[in-house]
Image (cartoon, rainbow, N blue to C red; front, side):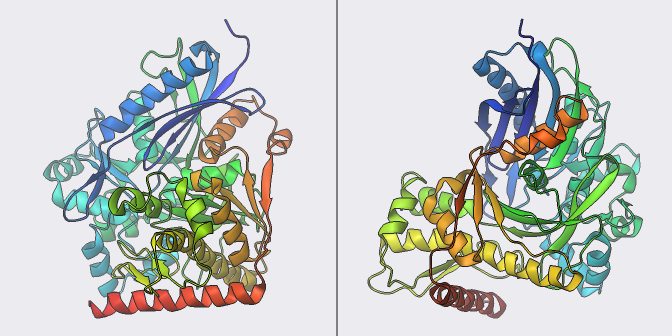
Amino acid sequence: MSTRSYILGIDQSTQGTKAILFDETGILIARADRPHRQLIDARGYVEHDPEEIYRNTLSVARDVLDKAGVEPGAVLGIGISNQRETSLAWRPDGIPLCNAIVWQCGRAAQITETLAAEGQGEFVRSHSGIPLSPFFPAGKLAWILRNVPEAQSLAENGTLRLGTVDAYLVFRLTGGRVFRTDYSNASRTQLFDIQRLQWDETLCSLFGIPVAALPEVTDSDGDYGETDLEGLLPHPVPIRGVLGDSHAALFGQGCLLPGMGKATYGTGSSVMVNVGHAPVFSTHGVVTSLAWSMGGQVDYVLEGNINYTGAVITWLKEDLGLIADPAETETLAKAASPEDQTYLVPAFTGLGAPYWDNEARGMFVGLSRTTKRAELVRAALDCIVYQITDILRAMNEDMSVTGTPSIRELRADGGPTRNSYLMQFQSDMARIPILVPRTEELSAMGAAYAAGLAVGLYDRQLLFHQTKQQTYMPEMPAEAASLRYTGWQAAVACCLSHGRNGS
């Protein structure tokens, strides 16, 4: 029997579920993952099967322990990070009422547009920190209540359970004994007052959502009950870290002070900067959320969300057939003609921050007769960088008003950060150093670190000083970078105009 202790990090993301095992020093020991189905219909509705996600969560936990050769009894605690905004409804016995509505899904557009037409947009933004948008849970949960008959009947008798993936997993893992979410996930629902730190009854009323159906909000390093993972562990262990995946990555990156920021390169992207213990409200198209609450102290963030970053690479592979493997994009981008001026604006389901245009549609701009496969692939990579640069610029504008330190470096995480072309171009466009940690699993790491600190396994002062990083510095001349970015802005203007005109 092993005498060492471990923390199990579970990262339930858009594409799949991972289990990561960390030892008593916070070092990653092993990883296991399983994908789940992406359920997309002709209307563009995007869904996941909650039962499949739950079963995969149990499976990857078993897989990672087997892979590492670690006795289940050596697990001391569990941390969970989750895909944010994906919304679920379930019965008191844990059975889902319908498939989960994925954060990418815009089916609630009519609900949010009606509220905007009624003049409720500023109230929603000022209380929740988030502009009205169908991509947040408030609209999605309202859609469920209006379109799933059993949801309404359960709401009427007070037994409906509504929440995000973290709350669902905690509920299932604890056998229904614990119905809680953390401050980071609550702050992304558009139903939570981020200054009073509680569910906002007026916001809930606007969307027709009963407060009683929402989970209790708990510190991100709080008590989420115990689980034995349905018999995998010899005894129940505490779940002591729960954060939305982007917040967990911010914590895992060690962005603990104002002005420290990170970008997660995933299916979509979250660019997030810590602004300290008081909120900074944006006038430049990004949103204000809670980073986390730990030890009873909240930290706030500015954040910009991008709907399609890594998903653009998936589109190149699975829909256009331009690549067989994402790893090809780096070589192709470097081989593309430097004279080509093709831009891709990936507004497949509208544009998120800082534009917030649900009607925008994607397009290639600047194609010429000499534009070939390599140039199209490079444009797809470049659009990831341009979108993140848009957000960094917006954040610096907002922070300059309040005196918050500007972003001096960007910490990057996610699979696409292995692409050296992408990371170098990001540094060139943002004009700041880009730091890429050797460990990729920052979301799982952040949740696991929170849990490990909560159970007393880790030392906070030592934990964040062991990460090794690769640094990219700006190499492109500033004038050339400015010209490239100006071309991007012109391409976005074409896309927005296209959406407004309905052409």
